[in-house]
Image 1 (cartoon, rainbow, N blue to C red):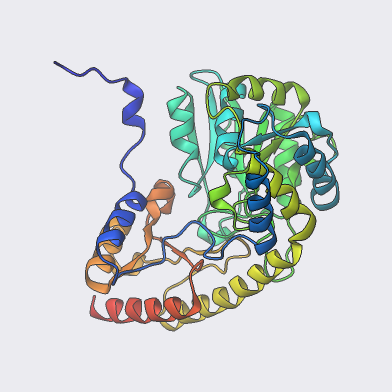
Image 2 (cartoon, rainbow, N blue to C red):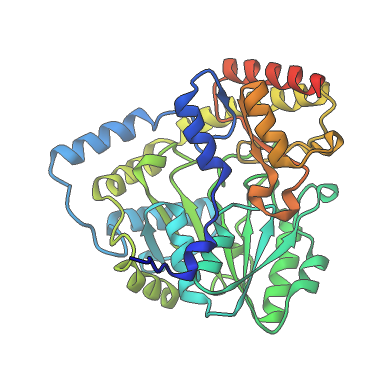
Length: 385
């Protein structure tokens, strides 16, 4: 029979990340610097908490909006860490932060309405918008500006069809941070143009050089105009637990919750309860990870400099985004050659948008010894080309 597939299947293109994972499985001699998750295990107290709740039988569904005790704990966290005033009804628990992004865009954007996304930016934004028949428009992030959003460029992109602006701080893949001054300018534009903002803050705790993370929802008059998305995956190395969350106007959260029955129904119950333990007793573990990431970051930037690979110093997350334009190879071809000849996986910049061309993403969420070995391989590879 002839198979008829929906047009939306063409939205999701094959990913170099997926391809590299398959190759890594077959070739263990290759070192991967492509990881988008911490190489640390979850905190020991969180693991013990999860085991305890599993043994006690917390293996059934949770309410669609999430466990009340977790949302209550998040109210305290948001007030203390993000200066966001909320109550439990302003919060939804999701299966990772990506589901919150999906639910928010489903709730806020109609077909043919525009969503402005950072470019280079997280790989999921564009396909989610397009899958929902929205129009994804790139907001170019320039290396000369440290990959920080430029308000003057943003103003030129907005049209009467623009509904939503996505920001990501700290950024995947560039490691850039949006300063309070820039966030204030973006907030003024959102008010003037009557836009909603989706603020992806999954890497909020992974900050270096005494920089400060600022949540745009904490700025005056922005609490009803912003959906703030955060996660336990990066902050507490709990990727496999699948717990993320969003905080927004109660009316938005209500509609996101209605859609939840069509997606995952609920985040895992035992994982939500273990997340309460993470919030209460794992701050020191996060600080330990940040300290280690910082040492790796400094080493990576130093070694890239020795190779004469220009790289904006990342201020957050765990990625470097070096410039490879001098080799006059598209980032996909450079990455493929490095994997085949240099035995190192990096992610081509075009995975993150057209303005990512001429760069590759290097993750330092891997052990120091592997990083040293991989950087040595990269140096030998570029000497040959």
